[in-house]
Image (cartoon, rainbow, N blue to C red; front, side, top):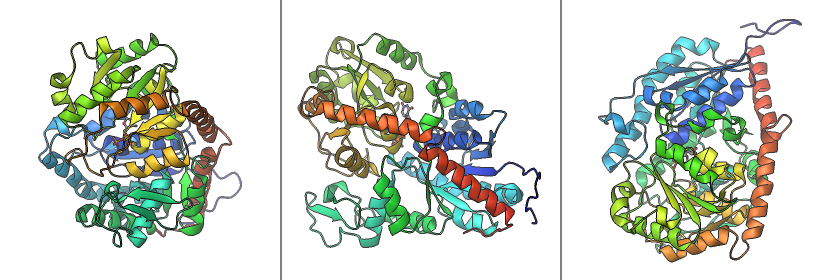
Amino acid sequence: ASMAPTKGDEQPPLRMLFFPFLLPGHLIPMADMAALFAARGVRCTILTTPLQASTIRSIVDRANTSLGSVDVVVVPFPDVGLPPSAESGTGLTSKDYNDRFLQTAELLREPFRRFLSDHHAEIDAVVSDGIFHWSVDEAAEHGVPRITFLGTSMFARSCTEAMLRSNPLEACSDDPAAVVSLPGLPHRVVELRGQMMDPVKRPHEWALFQLIHAADRRSYGELFNSFHELEPAYAEHYRATLHRRAWLVGPVALASGSGKDVASRGAIAGTLSPEAIGCLRWLDKKPASSVVYASFGTMTSFSPEQTRELARGLDLSGKNFLWVITNGSAAAASVDICMPDGFPTAHRGYVVHGWAPQVLILNHPAVGGFMTHCGWNSTLEAVSAGVPMVTWPRYADQFHNEKLVVEVLGVGVSVGAEDYATWMETHRVITGQVIAESIRKVMKEEGDGDMIRKRAEELRDKARAAVEKGGSSYDDVGQLMEELIARRCSGRKAGG
Ligand code: UDP
C-alpha cells in the first residue's frame, strides 16, 4: 500500500476495532474508551452482543459527533445455555452460570475472525480485551496490530507480572497468614498468602493468566484505564523494567463528560428503575459528605451471615448510607430476612436493588465515602470523584488494588479482608463493629480521616487535569494515534 501522504493529501480517519469481553466491568470502560478515541476523530467499531449493546447505547450515542464516530456491530450471544436474564453478566447466580458465561470468551472467536477477515484492510488497530488471548494470532494473521486492554491498574498488572515471573508462593508456607513479598516492584509490596491467587488451588485460573500475559507480551502494546500522575512509578516500571509499551488514557469515565447519558451508563436498555432514580433525589436531601455509598460491583455477593453484619455495620456507623444490592445475588435473596425492623429507612439508609447510577452517585456532594470491593473501574471512579474508600477486596485484582489505594495512595482504609475467594466460596465474616469503625475512619471521625480526604481531593484534581487538553492521558491518546497514522503511511502491515 503506497499511502505516503503528499502535502494536501487527505488521510481517511483512523479506524479502530474495540472488542470487549461481555461482563459489565470489561464492556463499560472499553465503550468509554472508544468514545474517547471518537472524540479525537477516530472511526471506532465495537463488536459485541445484543444485550451488551443495549447497555452501552448511551455512551455510543454521545460519541457520535461530527468529528468521530462509534458504531456497534452486533453478533449473537453465544449459545452456552444461559437464560436471557443471565446474559448481562450481572448477578450470575450459580457456579454453573458463571462457568458458562466464561465460555463465551472462546465462542466469540469465530465472529471476531469473520469480521476481521472481511474488514482488516480498513482497520488500523484492534483493541482487544486481554481475555481473548487468541486475538493476538487472529490479528497477526491479518496484519493488524493488536493492542490489549485488561481493565486493571498498572500496579495490579505489575503485581501479577511479578507473580508470574517468580511465583513467590512456591517457597512459602501453606499458612494463609504467611506474609509474601512480591519481588522487583518499585515499592515493597507484601500480601498475605490467603489474599493471593494460589496456582495450586486454582490451576485453571493460573493457566488462563499465563495465556493472557503471554499473548499480551506479543501484542503491539497495552492500553490502561489509568493516568501517569496516579501511579507514575508503575508506568515507568512497565516501560523501563518490563520493556512493555503502554498508553495510559484514563480515567475513561471522566472523559465521557456529564449529563443524562451518564445516569444510564451500563444499565440494561439504558433504563434505570424508579428506585435507582429515587436514590439521587434522596441524596439531594442529605448534607455534604454525610453519606457512605456501599456497592461491590457486578460480580460480588455476600453470604446471608455477612449480609446481616454489613447491615449492622452500616447502622452502627451512625452515617447515612446508600447500599446497592445486585439483583439475583445471594445477598439479594437473603436481604429481607436478614434486616432489622424498619431497615433501611428508620436507620438513615436507602437501598437500591439492581443497577445504580454509580458515577452520578460518587460525584454527588452528599457522598463522603465509598465502601468498595476495589474493582478497578469503581476504584478509579472514586478517585475521579475525590471520594475516599473503605476497601473490601474479594478476588481477581482487587487485593492488589487495595494495596495501591491504602498503602501507596493513602486514600482509603481497609476493612481487613483476608480471603482471596469468589462469592461462591467461603470468607471469614467481617463483623458489623469492624465495618462501622472503618466507615467512621474514612468519614473523618477517627484517625487521619481528614488527611485521607485531602489526598483524595488532590488526586481528583490530577485525574481531571490528565484527561483535559494537554494532560497526560490526552497526550497518550494523541501519541498512539500518531503512531498508528505513521504506521499506516509507512505501509507496514506486520501485526507485532
Ligand atoms: N456499576 C454501575 N452501577 C451498578 C453496579 C456497577 O454503574 O449498580 C458500574 C461501575 O460504575 C463500574 C462497573 O459497573 O464502572 C463495575 O466495574 P468494577 O471494575 O468496579 O467491578 P466488577 O463488576 O467488574 O467486579
